[in-house]
Structures are given as C-alpha cells and as structure tokens.
Image (cartoon, rainbow, N blue to C red; front, side, top):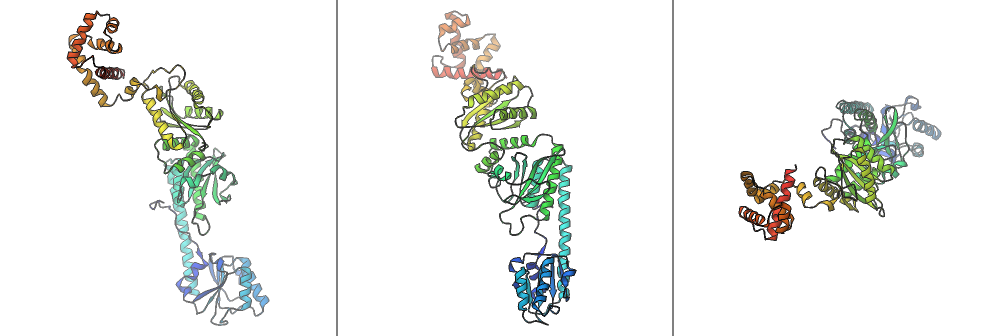
Length: 542
C-alpha cells in the first residue's frame, strides 16, 4: 500500500455496539451482555434515550436504545411486544440500567431478546445517558465528516488521473492502492488483461481465472457477486459494454468484505477506464500482450507461478505446451499496432495460441504455444507468410523450442542473437523463410559482434600493416592474401585465382609474411588471419 497516497484506504468508519460499550462513558456502568453476543458487530447509527412504552414509533433503525426500565410493561406479553417492535424496526441493541426499577433483568425481557436476537445489555451502575448520547453522536458525526472527506479524496485522485491522461495500468494500480484490495480488469471473454495485486500475488489472484470469472454473474451496476464475493463494475467503451473491473476480497476481512469507500473506488475506476480507453486507442488486449511479453523477456515476474498464471489468464495454454520465441524485425518502418493486430488475428484464425506484442518500435515478439505433437516449423512458416505479406523486407528470427514457460526468456535471447547476426540483405536458406541459430556461421557471428572494440582491435592488429602498405605503395597484397587463404594454403590455386604466375605469388606471400611477421605455412596462423579478413569484410560492409 502506498502510505503517501491521500486517498489510501483507511479503517471502516462506523461504530458498532461493541465499540460503544467499550467507551469509558458506558464502561463506567459495568455493562454486561445478556443476549445477542453474536450481534455486537451491528453498526450504531444513533443513540436514543426513551422512557416510552412504544419507543419503536420514534426510531428508524440502527439506534442504541437506552432506558432505565421504568416504562417496561408488567406482563410478559407486553414485554414481548416491546422487544418485537424494537427488533422489527432494526434497533441495534437495548441497554437497560439496573439501578432504579430493576436489579436484575426480567426473565420475560431476556427470553424475548434471545428469541429475536436483539442484544440486551445491562448496566450495574448509574450512567449519565445524556453524556453517552453526546459522546456517541459526536463520534458518529465526526465519522460522517471523515467519510465525506475520504470520498472527496477518492474523487479528486481519479479526476487527477483522468486529467493527466493516465493509462489503464495506472488507473487499476491506483484502485488497488486506495482500496487495499486486488483489482483485475477483464474483457468480455474473461481474459484478465491487468491484475494489480494487493495483499496477495498474481498467481493467487489469477489461478483458473476464466473458470472462476464465468461463475460470476455480470451486472449492469456495481455489485458483490460470485461464489467468492467479488465486487464488480461494468466498463464501457463508446456506449457498449467492453468488460468489467473486479475487486477481490482480502483473506483477512473480518467484517464485510467491502465498504462504501470500496464501492466508490470501483465505480470511479470504471469511469476512469472508460475515459482512458478513449484517450489511448490502442486495444488493451494488445497492451496486455506487450506487457506480458516484455516481462517474460526481461524476467520481471515475481515468480514462475505468477508468469504462468498471468499468461494463462490471457488465453495462452501453459500446461503440457511447447513454446517457440519468434522475433519479427521490420526494416522499412512498418512496425506498430496494425501488423501486431493482423499477425495475432492470423494466428488466432489458424487456432494457434500466442502472445503477440511490440518489444521495440520496429520489433514484434511472438511466443507460440504448441501442442506436444504439433511441429513448430509449419507454424512458423505460416507466420512468415503473413509477415512478408505485410513487409517483404521483414526478417523473422526464431529461438529454440522449449518445454517450460520458464525457458521462454532463453528462447527469446536466442532469437535476438539470430537477429543481431543477420545483416541487411542476408539471403534466406533455400528451404525456409526464417533464420535460426544453426544459420549463424563465422561471418554472421562477427556481424553480431561488429560494434565490439575488441573485434576492431583484433582486425587492425592482424591486418593493419598490410593495409597500410597497400595504401602507401598502391599494391594489392590484401587480395593476394585473401586468395591464398580461400585456397586453404594452396599456392597454385591462389595464383590461378589472382591471375598471377607462381613465382609472383611466392614473392608476394614472402612480402606478406615479412610485413605481418606471420608464418603462412602455419594452419593456426592462417586461421587467425582468415578470421581477421572476415571481420574486416563485415566492418567495411556497415
């Protein structure tokens, strides 16, 4: 909970019968609860002093009735009628002073109160009823003022969120902080798009979410419903129901799970979400997928259970599934929400569960969830067809298949390495439309590492003096070295490729050995020079 939030949750404001009996002004009378102990949590709306035989006619319900016992009827039937009228009107409790008329409560009164469940409290000592009334009423009026102030702070907090254009995540987070309850936003197909836990974890809140949500009736107004007692409110968009926001009861709620303040928070949450949807036109499903993917890629979930439950609540099967991470890089600036949505629809039409979301402005991340017997290659090929239809220059990179959602981050890292090692214009393998780890050879590995200064320093250390010599003397010894290395050290083949005589080739190779201080007959040194030449080509191609 955010203690600095001015609208943060505060204790329930009403007084109960037990609260009033504990006040010093009443405790001085040595109160003893004779009947109705289970009902001492009844709220006290007012205190009423009466010496009438029919006090109920002046009550509205919720009053703590104080009497000296003087007006009680003599006969048992009259006592029962007296108690019945108090119980029917909803009196909170009856407090009788045992000082003047009675020194013990009449049996008829005890029996009648027990039958009706009306708390009966006796006072052994004289108590100033007027002082009791003043103290309780002052507390009640103060609590009402506090309630009004808290409600005002709630309205002000949500108004501020709306004025600064807060997104759905900010609104739901604020609702959880203000109420102290977990708050979940779901769409019409019962997918939990945003979950802000409070006092629990995402895993606890979202486990079997769709099943639990479908047992909760949908109301047109804010109401407590479902077997679990969720407080829900509808969320609309452009005049139509879009989904709903649910507030979950906490595990340690002793009294009512939700108070008036919680209802106010949830109603304002629903209103703020409607405005947020108008301000931020990106579909919330897309935002939910993006956030879930980014959390998976960056491993930001609090636990594996949280990650699994959150993805499952978005419709991704997490049990007995295999996962393949795919990255789509748009090289012509065609990224954004439209291709994201179209690719998701393409996969959904094909019956392939997936999370699809933008990771960077020109890169989409896709996590495919496949059945154990379902090969992933045809699925990725179908995805590639849709991608290339959107952008013929897009590059699709694929990570390794994994069998546990915990390994999805590794699959994405592998796909990212493939993408980094794929230079512009890199031809596709003849049998497929995507790149994978097995495609990364020396040249593509060096391309991925081209910005590493250690690669640049190595290349210069190996070839710098030869390049300087060619520049200063107008020679082309670097090309001769390339032909020699490409021919795996065969001088005859190298001479033929360079259009040189064998004697000229021998002479040039000796010059190269002298300039570089290398032995070209050494297989290890030839390999080092070959790596340096390949790195030079990669660096010059930038």
